[in-house]
Length: 593
Ligand code: ARG
Image (cartoon, rainbow, N blue to C red; front, side, top):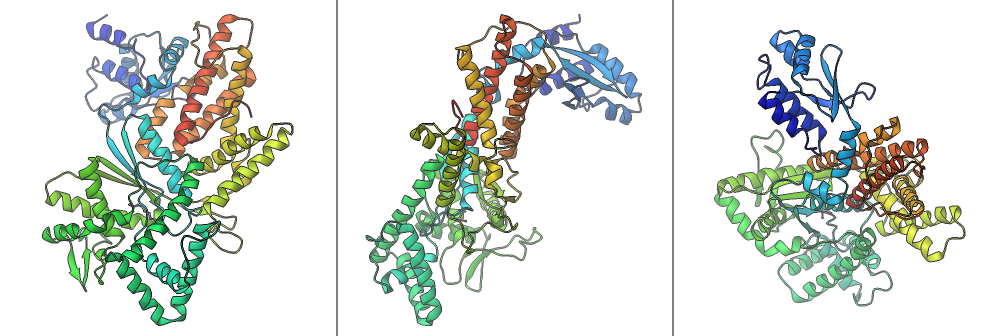
């Protein structure tokens, strides 16, 4: 054995969390001892057709073609330099692919090494933990949250949890829309109708919405009311104490209604600094952008154009309206500065509807120019946008009478529907247990239905689909977890117990399950890279399906102690990954279902 291959043989003893990276290194290393290869050679490790192997190196083909060499011969030569290993067998296929079939030893050792949450976390952790601000949910005050708000809340929360899992420092900030023009109309309505905010009845937020509607009507009916509404808004913005007190009360009522929803969804914010928080910080922004010549006056307004951009060369980013008022763009600029200076944010991730893409593109371009004028590198900004939830008619989902669906009603309905299903299946179940399970199943179903879709697509909301026990649904995953819990009850042991590992040969379905398990950390990495929770969902679904075929084909509690112990290990790792993944998605699991 040469020194290089001796070292390599030694190195392959260490099992990495990502087998494809490890194999890629092995192949690259082998290529250094064949003169035909150079640094440009990329082994291109991909998963293989399971009939031939577990992984495949595809890179020889394009490399040989480019170099004018025979790919099959080159692969043969390369294959000879790949040292023998206990962890995989190699073979040559087709015009020059190299197949790797992982050995039992590899799988068992991998399982042993990544058998708890902590080992996965340390394996995937980036060298340096980042400070990341998540800006999500962010409803407008004085209105109820409606079904549209669920996406930002749930996607934002699950990505925050994922970043937490990766060891980053996460700050969750609810950027409330609490300083908008809606307050002029609302204040007008409150005053004209002589309403006391202390006495709004059982559903104060609904009453506020009604007052807003009535205010709109007043404005429509009479031109002078519109002027009055404007005056009320200006008074508020100039710090009139009566209006400020009313505004604060409105915010409190709104926050109470939001908190009920956040409680149900198990979402907590570190801060809820709304737009109003930045109202005294905007003058500084105008001054800076003017001095850097990034914005200019246009008909009394302050605007930013981006000449290098196809559309934003002409489409202005208005940062101060012609009446002198600040707006959504101004407060967002001030917010970036605040998060950067006060919190040392290295990244800011905004989770909103796709219709705000232009706003964020313009914001990001403006921030880039502003900070480069100051010779500072700004935090990295990301817009995590999502599509619309559709009704049966393929249009944005609405109630029968065309109103937006209140989020609280939707969540309550989810719980009620889950309750019916549980009682139907289990009529003798104790009431409090029914309540508990209904919350976990109902809310889990709604969350998962959202998270399991590529967020950039619209999706059709369907109660039947999301609550189904079959298919890519939360109940299906929860059922897999409950099933494994029952296996451990029968075995009178715990999934966390450590299992002796014996090298036995693996059946096809055991092998298949192992093949899926080793991808868990890789999928977490991919999900964080793409900021798309559906990658994790799809994986968890496939893992449950593979578990199910494993379980249907292999009895776990067999006499043979070695086989039993190995199978319990597979169950233990499956439940660990399912529960860890689901916790990242914000979905709870059950002992029994
Ligand atoms: N309040 C806004 C809305 O309801 C979302 C705010 C998103 N965050 C931000 N920094 N602009 O559409």
